[in-house]
Length: 247
Length: 247
DNA sequence: GAACATAGTGTATACTATACACTAAGATGG
DNA sequence: CCATCTTAGTGTATAGTATACACTATGTTC
Figure 1 (cartoon, rainbow over the protein chains, first blue to last red):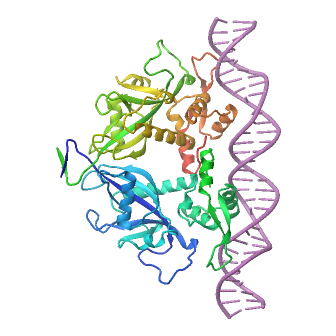
Figure 2 (cartoon, each protein chain N blue to C red):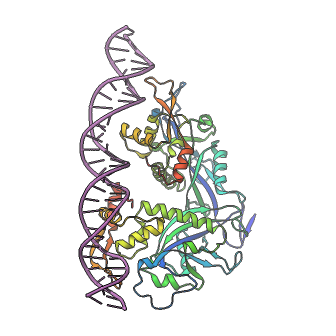
Figure 3 (tube, rainbow over the protein chains, first blue to last red):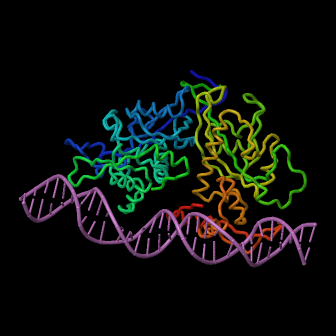
């Protein structure tokens, strides 16, 4: 038991984890090998877990849990995420604190919400299957969520959209070697608007930080596209000199 | 005494309050009436309080304090701010949570930091003088701060700069009727760079939400400038249609 | 009325965003 | 092997926006 002279709230860290996952209903995995699946068969998804304890037992919720007293906030978010879903090695940034007095029926719980991005190209197995009761949901097929997690998710999505316009965050979703088409599809998935192919490519290449490689994609049923990489060092150097990403 | 089965951190709300205040050292108030003081005699300042209890007794710190268990996070920020400094009626938005395990020597304390802006034109007296041990500090004359408040302040300043580029937040600092010169001086103070007068005015007026009035400023020792107002309704309507401020 | 301080104004040029449609390459299936 | 399919890859003209730049106007002060 822990006693204090003044009342203390509980504090949790919850994560809104975005990924670019195969486009299929999470409960009905597509049978067959699905080798060489293509970005256009992928869509923006969110990682949820199914609660097994009350309150909201059985409901879907954001992964997260209580912060330990000797643990940094970010560390708690990463730890809870790994414990509940097996997902590691991700991009993580603090989103906001949510603390409406009645958001948890048990006691006052303030949550520090995180926005995370997992690269399902680089870590596909762990992320897709590790946890028994975790699942990826497309944005238009979300179930009802426990607590105020719908509000948190909406906030995260709004932040993802604006961040994606203002920083080269797209490459957190994509493999190290990607096609320009993948960047564009992802742009369209996140922003929810279509853009012109020629103009989009022009703008991307004009940044000087998207480097064409002497390789093309493989296992596609049509002409293979050239692969590119993102030159992060170069980008960071430019950014520190005042350059601002905008695509 | 309050008892819990698991350890709980304490949670505070701290505010980084920005204002456009008369340019004078906070400890040496300028004698004399100072009527009709002009924007150029004003500078971007931050509101700090001097702690009278340990830890860090005597040091300057951000205003803030413990969140009550039945109170929303924003409400706690506003309440603490009013209790400690007398400042009310301000623009307030959540900045971030800071929770390094050792940021408070007493116990684990997580703080939800807020970025606030007080309009010292509309609420000058309360803000400037209400509290015995509160003071406005220019950004280049800040004292050492208690806890991790320097980190919080830097984070707030970075956020203020980017927010000020992306949203018409300048008008939170300015009187309802302002001159274009005031907007420009404030822009230069926040961004720390000088801009061209003609281009700046052109861009401001081109937004269509800065409305010229049939009035000029008073009590200035030179040609009086025309007053303008910010049409917030119009701006919000445009924004909701996809228009994005950028000045 | 001279000196001062800030208000207020326009144009030319470079840069950036947008709109728009066809050919090239490789895969597939009869 | 040929027809068909699918996506890759490319350029130009135009409109819009950002920048650079310097003088006259108006009111105050002494």
